[in-house]
Amino acid sequence: MIKALTLKEYVKKNDKELAGLIVKMAGIAERISQELPYRRGKADTKNVFGEKQLVADKWADKFIIKELDKSGLVKEMVSEEQEDVVKLNDKALFSITLDPLDGSSNIESNNLVGTIFGIYKKDLPAKGRHQVGALYILYGPVMTLVYATRNGVNEFLHTRKGFVLKEKNIKLPKQGKLYGVGGLRKDWLPGFRKYIKGLETEGYKLRYGGAFVGDFNQILHYGGIFAYPALSTKPNGKLRLLAESNPMSFIIKQAGGASTNGAGSILDIEPESINQRVPTYVGNKGLIKNLEKIL
Ligand code: AFP
Image (cartoon, rainbow, N blue to C red; front, side, top):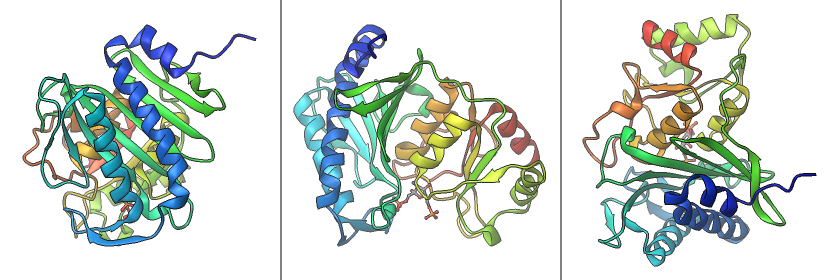
């Protein structure tokens, strides 16, 4: 049997410039996964979006910022849990966007949660197209780490030997028939409603778990479309452009898929603020094209 490459071996060989950062992020994920059982409950505070924070949200945010600061590799960060850009090592090459615990309202019910990073060599905020890499960790039945650079999308499985390569150069399966959509159906806009009706008629199956990382991960593996759409009550939907939608749009693009906000690729949006939300649709290219036509 051929020995599976460890994450460290793989990145050093294939994505050298980002190797130190990716290995650091993997170490952070291992620690978060160990700590989650002990960081439960509500924090009695709200984040910049007015959403109630959990103990785990606040702890993970502080922990990740501290660890990336210690690494000396990061110039500045935008976190979903912080109001302003966080300045770290002025001489460092990378800027990072962060969703420390995506889907944290799943913690209580022990459903999926994740961590999302976007990686830039530019000051923030910047267009998603300027990312040089993006990465997410899924704290699932097995912890997995998916990272993308312009060289492709790779997935690693957490084992007794740490993260080892599960699959390299992942491409979206073309025949997948899954869809996952957030927001109340009654608030969907007419065009979107029509589009989903069309998918259902074609036999697409709904799978929605309430954590972007988990819902995205199944589209990456099985094919289909994920959306947190524009709603009549929230025209920009729910997901954060910098911390959530841009990294996932980067990953889906490298996997041969596409993203849109309804009008064009999410990666082309010039951010007006670090806390901006964006209607988010990601998945197979053909599905995104048809959706844009209908919207
Ligand atoms: P939480 O981190 O507050 O659980 O929100 C998760 C999230 O930002 C994203 O991961 C999900 O796709 C989306 O919100 C789920 O939103 P709904 O609770 O409205 O389904």
